[in-house]
Length: 158
Image (cartoon, rainbow, N blue to C red):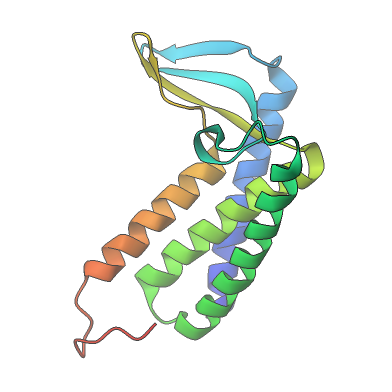
């Protein structure tokens, strides 16, 4: 059962890396291609975490976030082994694992994460993100949803 969840994580990593490779090879840094009135494709680099958190930390954030991603990934795999039968919980963990490793690949290979999805409304711009970030967010949402679902025996053992 664990292999099914690791395969889902691998799929997230593959789709994330293919999309980043495509954008990186077809866009110049900072280039913006409007797709809809509220959505554009861009090529931006993020040396920090979500919302560019610690992006001006002098380069140490690359290794800090890499270590955090590695530790979290090991912990997630341990949880997946233990809870592989809990579909919603394991699905959420697998999405987070794939997203974390997708961004880790960028940090190690390039020193930054490649972001390319940009939503905006008039002068308001939401920070650009990528498929790995989306997988992490969706996975976290699934974990929250799972925490509110009633278990068969009425208890939660995590």
